[in-house]
Image (tube, rainbow, N blue to C red):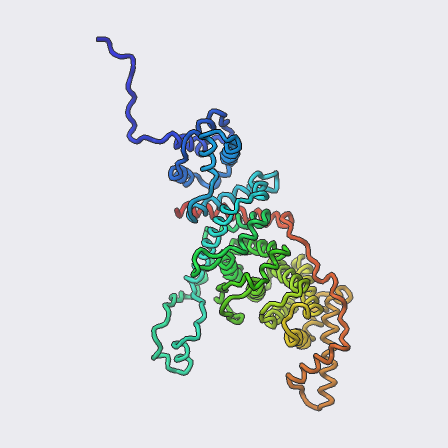
Length: 537
């Protein structure tokens, strides 16, 4: 009997679905210029997706390799969209499975992270197709999943700061009451506390934060800058669990911790800029700002209290705008250095100016400890005056000083539109009178005499009340009480020369091109964090 011409191939040890080999062709080819034929895509969309296999292959691809092979990933999505439009079974149904939303946060995070990296790849050099796609992306379900994922990630990153130093203020409880009257030994066991590390160890731990997941902030920024639907979802999304913070609350909480530790590393500072970009985009949009100031949007936010000085602890829900005011005040107080990060302060002051401008224009009065904000701004004036030689060495310092002076003058001239009561307005005037000598020295130090109408307004108001207080004090032959000072301030309104506030709150809309070099540095930092995250997994 003659042997059969047919031969039997060796049976493979493991049978591999055809789609896996197609994935490998798509994402593991060394040459990005390889041409994926029409036949390849026809076969590709005849096979059901294998999410587990795809995730396994993608996890072995480094961020650099993914960027290098971006043409293939772009082709995957464009081909999937094409087949959905063609509505030819079964390819259209299979293609839809490729572009639908992920099942849970653990799957959304790497996809959202990767989207941020791809969107920023050479986006200032050519029209990046991913960036263009963000503009008209309106799938609410997917956007809500992304916002929820971002919120969960923020909570995880914030908790890493708390793990180093638990800064939650004690509530007024039976235990704290007994301790207050000296009977702390009788108090029931309090909540567990985090062991406090040694100062050097804490410094090292804080310097490593935030964790590599923070790279997802880059995707969030790109969506916020391009897509108003995303912004509205970020602002209005409720938490999945009533005991959990909303995505906006989680984001604001993390940002407050980042602000207090922004000085610890260049990497931390870069992500802090990115968060400030997002805040600026939110507050300069009229509808979003209205929502941030609305009682319907009240939320509870855990703000960082890991470094002094502390702002008053506020329990319960507040409008997001009040939380943002606290965050900016904290940011100004906790990043004072002789080598001042002027860009950081320009952004912080800009957010304040935009918020106060909105409150004044809409005559919205929110509950807030305004005296703390005035104290912070005037303390910043004293700091700048003290370290004028260091500040002047930065060519951007003039822009920062102009914003600061305009902000104070605007509050002075328009405060009656947004401050809650006359006493709050009086307090602002009183603080300016107290700072009269500092304001004059500040004006002379930075050569603002005759150069800044806003600066002259502050000086005029301070001098006006100073002369009134001195004359009243002499008439009574004694120092004036706080009540008498308040009475003099009210009387002085009648003869107070305040120039019109027109133009003091002028600001320019956020333009990404103004921060091109900074965003390139942030994108490189995100790539490095993606590598670290991939190694951890």
